Picture 1 (tube, one colour):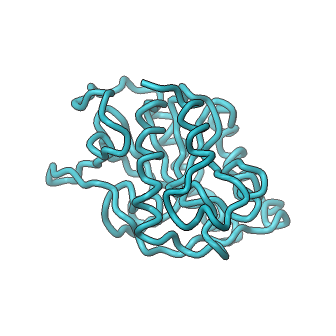
Picture 2 (cartoon, rainbow, N blue to C red):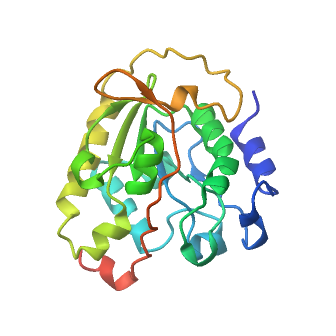
Length: 233
């Protein structure tokens, strides 16, 4: 099995879909390659495309703040996105773009092997669960993910746009992540040697006990808030 660094090096030259033509660089992911907590967003925005790192704007500052409140540094988690290249004008990723990029994310999850995966926003949460979701209804809930726990939460940009109305919800979700990290890990049922891109170990189990596989969701990308919005908190 190759390392995360080797996978990132290959992804840097990825031309599997049309997004490669308009990007500044691939935004593969950042953080601890052995992190127990992994965040997944939708895709890079303008600043992420320029800097090559996910969640670097005001939304990223709020993410860092929430992590600090539960005693975790940004450097101790791993942050990635469903797609690794910025869609033009921050439009929704197209189904074929998501399908082309999905193997990178599947491999990241397998190599990092986090205990807890937190999805940021409706798009990433719905994609991981394989169905349309109302993020305000399922945020903070736990979904088993073959030895891992998936916890969908609000996108930090949406919280900033709410003027603080959703801040306590976000804070409660991060507290749930902290609790999940402290609990024993459930046994795995799928071996870690699955081929890159196979979603077997990424299917969430619903109340009926059936496994869902990730699917593309038609959800608008939250616009990046201004730095002044972060000052509300």
